Image (cartoon, rainbow, N blue to C red):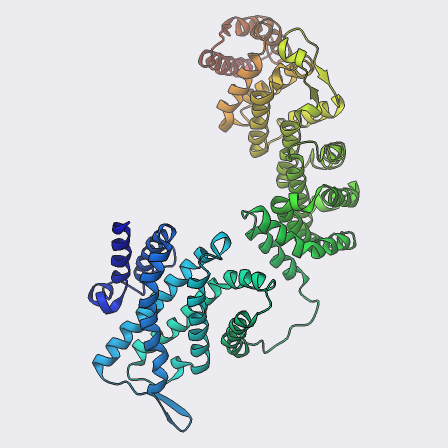
Length: 575
């Protein structure tokens, strides 16, 4: 403990100009680094973090070492008023000797640093320790209020002085840091307010609040708005502010988020009520959905199941097929962005664990497969497509039991038990949508969807499911081989080959004996002898490297045969 006390005192000494001026003056206080800090600011911040860590371990000792030093510099600052000489309307600071100006400069720099230190320690006086450290905080806060009032009322930085290039920035910084430190203790004042509500005598608290207002009011008046903007002309700015507010507390504790949602609840309900009125104005709808997306990401638990379901049902009823078509076909416009954000909101909903929002899954699937997908299937619309397939993937991944009902028997006897399947039509439609995307030129959608299928296979054994194996596996294998054959997505050659291997691994014997001959029979531009040669050369290997080599070989040979056959005149003997 003694070592920590020595460390604390040494750090406090090293940040004070009156004890360490020669070294501190060497630190650059002008050039900003990548974090928008000067060398001096970084040094001070790191030093104050050391003080804060010691405060965690030795709160009483830290306070008793720091507060007297602060008091000393505060007395110097508060005593400057007696050196102000008035001459008509002007005021002058009657400190002109070089040595006195140097001492004042050091005292002001130290006061600014110590005010930052006191502000940094504000968190150690609130919460569970409020009562035990109340007296220490009550010694600090009135002094902060006093120095803030003094700075706001006297405005020392506006006084004429001997060396304004040095002292004026010091005086401005002291006043700014005093206000910043007082702001840091606003949480302590709020907790103090809660405590005095249960007491008869509120004089002490009222004096602090009244004095704090006296310190800040002159600054508010000085910066008052000269031009009042027309009322109701900037509603989008309101939603931006609310959205940023919600986003800022997304990582906070549950209690903070409850308080935030309680304060925003009326605004959220009004925004939802207005949504149907602005559905034809995509720029406004875009702002609304951005707000709701942030709400769902940060406060969906606080909103509750009933209200969340009400929001989703409202959106689903508004986004009809015609409305979606109008929005999506305006690619890159606000309308397209509206649909993207709506799909993002649904992604958040379907990822919610438990059974809370499972009743919404049929409606969400219907929106995806029956309304959005037919519009984007044969068009580019890359942004909307990406979000739609992400939503489909999350529905399958996070709600697998919506389609495949597992049981104790099936988990113990995987080979013999019948798979219990529900919502088969929707599952088939989703798989067909994924398969159709592999026939289109968008390489980003292709890569995204291929990775989704691989994840579903890794997590849920998609390729091994009876329905997929019996009715879809052949088509996916065929499509992926055709893609390799046509060289349309050569950048993804390794990814495609890995997916082919994982699909073939479901039943290697069936792949080599059944699928491969059928695939070659369906390939145009080959004669029977060439098909037989290709099948014979694809050796039935079961490890990934050998399988990959076999795929590359058969694809290259098939291209070669087609090229040769296509360049020969009719009747020529083929290879």
